[in-house]
Image (tube, each protein chain N blue to C red):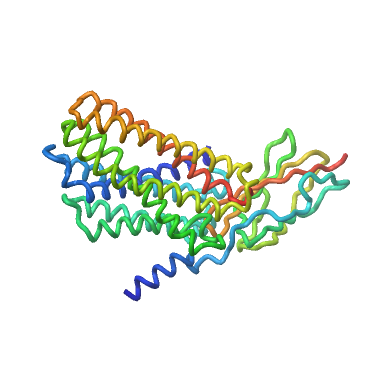
Length: 288
Length: 115
């Protein structure tokens, strides 16, 4: 029960932190291309702030559950020794960095276009919060793994953070400005997403001791994550090759299909993040 | 700028406040799957690196699991814990340790005591 709650909080914090930061990135990069949709930029900024507030709550919950997870029972929450251990752990450092990042998201998205300084700080703090904890910390190739992980997290955030704003804009924008926005987003995503996959592959090569490790629980989860990522790439390709041209031809029905496709992408990324939370929290690349 | 460089170096090198390394069970006494003629008085856990033991239980097949303690208050690679008096039967020992990567790692081992 406690383990399940802790894992759900962990996955939820990944999702909300990356979404809040990613929505801010989307707003900063594409906010001026929202066309004539009245208040669209403001709605996307509100979305970023709500995600950031949600992330603050879930990160706090995860930190509260940490001593219980260490103890393997709910009573661990009240154990002062475990609380002390958690307080001086990397989990607290990562949570503090995430909380600071979310405050920066709220400050940056308080106006549109977003403020640059808190916006850049939000991105840097989000990346740092993932780099200071996890299997890459103690790995031999730390100097290589840290930037790879940073890039991986940034790319996931960019992708995830675009989905709900695009879903929102698919309602308020007409087919032609929506197609133009998707074209701009896809042009950048085409560069970012393949590198996301390559960074993940490079990290797997550096972390896994041998091919046999793919048979361990860690390896199976890693393969599951890769299969989900392939599904995501398929949906993204569908959006680019079918839906964007249909929108560009003024087909309003394509916007409805696009919204469904974006929901499916969001569900798949959520599944990837749940697999990642289990992968990085419960198992080790060396199979232990 | 200097502060930024120091912060970056700290991030890349993984900080300095945590001296533990990622830990997994290297070997133990009783060993995994051991058949013992008499009940062991202590449990010895040897980890690949220093680890902080945060929970330890023993469970006889068909019975409730029981917490074992007190646990060491400092991280160590070799941990010895006194066990309660054990009757003949099959046992499962399970634990949780925290390594320097900040993760809690669960583990378990089985042994039996002949009647």
